[in-house]
Length: 149
Image (cartoon, rainbow, N blue to C red):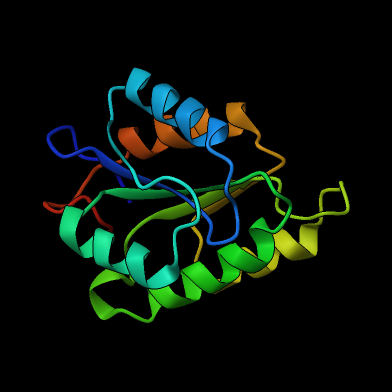
């Protein structure tokens, strides 16, 4: 699941019910500073649109962000839809932000998101953990298409 040096495109998206944009602007700037080419889909992205844009842009990584507290439910629907597409089944996808409305980290919620197909979950927007993930991803040997062999 490495980001190759020649193709390091990231598709950044909000969830279907999340109309917030500041998190997406911040993440776009952060990812750009990491040397990544970012396509920001913006807020309120339905699952079918996310699938179409993944096919169109062929990203090396998808980053899903939510701050409205519905990231778990919306994110679960998004990853199930993405993983249902054979050509997107191995695409690295991560989610982060405010995943629940209860204000607490929930290991079961994180485990369910991982089991559904997310490669990493950054509950409550752990930016340092996300930065380490990106560093590790860039350091891994890559296959010709930037996916695991």
